[in-house]
Structure formats: structure tokens, C-alpha cells
Image (cartoon, rainbow, N blue to C red; front, top):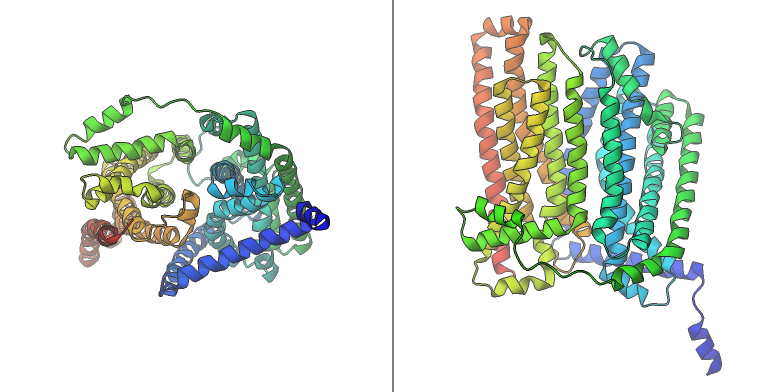
Length: 589
């Protein structure tokens, strides 16, 4: 009996514990796949695969055209290589900053506020093992979008530049090794702040957010300290390269990734392997640093976070809620109260509004500094194209937020949804309140950002009005897709918005939203581009003037694009909402 008791009390070795957790993750993955495929679920996966392939192919085509344009425009090889290297380094540097922030936010919720972490903490398991288990999950949730959206750009560059086969061979290993570095740094920041500032989520989020905003301000100041240059001139390209030099510091992992890819594209495989080895070594090093910090900080931080008393909520309605109620005076009072409830939950969750402010703040800084470049009338067509690309970027950013925050709204009600079910409300009213909350919260920031972009680019009034109208269509359509699919494909047992958004329904929502954005922007941008080109370009104007058929075709396309985008917005709002109404009405709790 004594021997048995001693064997029971003896804890598992590190290797045995790791095998247990890998077995646990494998079983969870297989169970999730079986549940998803059961009942014809394989059709859903096939649909997502097809739509994702279409999205990937569309992005590949856009990036290929962009790299082809740069290659044709910049004929000097050295200038071309410097510009592409600066763009890559800047892209990966911004991505590194975002991955640090997003991984830290996801880890904070999964390590300190999830039911699984609470259960694992009651078992004889090492703290660092729990951290590694949740870190792998956070790494996947924060980086899958980067790999999905970044791979078409990198593959397109390889095709346009005629890269050898080993460029594509090292592409995925370089990306995976890179994401480990910012993810580990985000984990260290998360654990350190949770240990030093326990029990206050607002402070934990605001401290790194203040650092990020400081970097944004510094970056904006660096952009404004230069001479203005005409667009598409040699001085303009040299100024662009000079302003991107700060992202090419030799100690930045983002530069290692950029340099490794460019060396592989040039055919220098030995240099590419060297940068890959550097990234892998640093990924393992920072991962071990994060594990060491978790070994020392996780358990005391968990006790401090979960054991600290929180202040009582104020009973009266805040001024923001009163303003929202006054602004929706035309709606029934039950619907207004539901909208205010969602608004209040959004304000109380710093994880949501901090990401919102960071990403939209970055875009606002970029749009504000567009005015640093002047251009003559011969480049007005290109400026118009840039303005529509800015519109597409804002729409894509909005689609990520509707997928991340709006789609999980129904699922997050979870086990407590029976409370709303007892109220004298129709379920249709609940869904409409979610839609109004999403659409109203999307229109204001998107319209403001696009207005700032158009004012900085000094586009014509007609284009400005067209952009604002497109923002309205995007906000309404994306909100309808997210709310309707969220009601049709809920996950009531899941409490993490990140995991809900990363599931089948969230992936389908993101793919459909992206396809909708591309369709709407093309319907409004392409005819406006041809119309403006006919006005500003003498060759095009003469060609259209000599061909009444082409002139009538352009005008008809402009009118048709406007009405077609309106019809598409109506369909993508009505159809998902109708499907969501039917599923939501039959749902039992």
C-alpha cells in the first residue's frame, strides 16, 4: 500500500507530461473534426475550401499586378530591389507589432479567464506546461490570418521576379519561424503585466497600448519630416526608400524574414538558409524565455488576477448610453436597450476596443500623412486608384472586426441566453438589435477614415460622395453577413471569441465578407476609374470621344455599377439575416 501511495503522489516527468498534453490536443482535434463532419458537415468544409481558394487566387492576382507594375515602372535594378526590400521590411515590422499585441491579448484571456485554465490549475500539472498548451493555441489563432493573407503576396512576388524553386521551399518555414518571435514577446509582456498589475484588465491592456501608440506617433512624425516630392518621380521613390529604412534595422526579426525571402528570390540560397537558421534559433530562444517567465510568474499571477476584488458597477446609466438612447429615439425601446447592452459590453472589454483603436489608429496615421506627397494633374488617375485601394483596405479591416467581434455575439450569450428568452421580446428583435449595433458602430469610423483619406488626396467631390456611399454599403452588408451567419452557425458552448471566429463559421464569414468587399469596390471603382481617365487623360478622352459606343458603355457601366452594388448589399444583408432568423427561431436552450 505504501508503494502504491508513493507512486500515486510522484508527479510525471516533463517528457511524460508533454506526451499527455499532445495526446489531449490530438483527441480534441479529432473530436472537433468528427463533430464538424457529422451530418453532412463535409459540405461546409468543401465550401470554405473553395471560397478560400477563390479569395487566395484573387489576392494573388492583385499582388502580381502590383509587383508587375513596380517592375515595369522602376527599371533600375538597385532602386527596385531597395524599394521591394523596404516594403517587405515595413510590412513584416508592422505585422510583428500586431502579433505581439494580439497574442498577448488572446493569452491573457485564455490563461487567466478561461474555464479550461481553471480546471488545469487544479490538477498536478506544471505551470509552464499549461502555458505551453495555451500558447500553442494563441499562436495559431493570432497567426493563421497572416499566413492565409500573406502567402499570396509572397508567392506573387516569386512568380513575377522569376524566383527559383527553393524560394517557395523556404517560404513557409521562414513565416512559421518568424511568428514565434513576436508571439513569444507578447506572451512575456502578458505574463509580466499580469504579475505586476493584477486584477485590472484595463491597465494590463492600456500599458502596452500606450507603448504602441507612442510608436505610431513616432512613425507619423518621421513621415512628416521630409521634403515634398512629386508623385512617381525619382525623388519620390528615393524619399520612399529613405522613409522605410528604419524598418530595415539589422536586429529586427522582420528584417531577417524580408532578407531571407529576397535572397532566396535572387538565387542566393546560402544566405537564405542563414537567415532561416537565425530565425529558428531566435524563435526557440524567445520561446524558452517565455516558458521561463511562465514558470516563475504564471501561478502567482493567476492567484492575484482571480483573487483580487473588483469594484462594484455603477447603477446609473452613463452619458454614452444616454447619448446612444437619444440617437435611436426612432426605434422601439426594447431594441434600444438591447443595443445599449451590447455597447456597454463592448466598452467594458478592453480586449475589443483596444484592438479597434490600434488598427484604425494606424490607418488614420497613414491617411493623414498622404498629404506629404504632391502630384500634378497627370497623376490624378493614379491618385483615384490609390483612393479606391484605401477604401478596399478599410473594408478588409472592417471584415476582420465583424468576424472577430460581431459574428460571435450570439454565441457569447451562451448558457445565459435563457434570460433574454424569458423577456417579452421576439427573437427577431434580438437579431435586429445586433445588426443595428454592428452597422451603426461600423459606419462612423469607416466613413471618417475614408473622408480623411479623400481629403488628404484631394479627390473630386463626386468620388468623395461615391466613397461615402460605398462605406455605407460595406457597413450594412458586412454586418448582415456577420449577424446572420452568427445566428445560423452559433457555438453556444464556446466562451472565447477568438476560437469562435477561428472556427468554421468565422472562416466562412471572413471569406464571404472579403468576396463581397472585392465585388462592391470593383463595381464602384472600375467605372469611376475609366470615367476619370477619360476626363484627365488626353489619349483616352480622344479615344472615347471618337467612339460613341465606348462612351455610352462607360456611362452605362457607371450607372449599372452603382445600382448593382446597391442590389448586392441588399441581397447579402437580407439573405443571411433571413437564414439567421429561421435558425434562431428554431433554436432551443
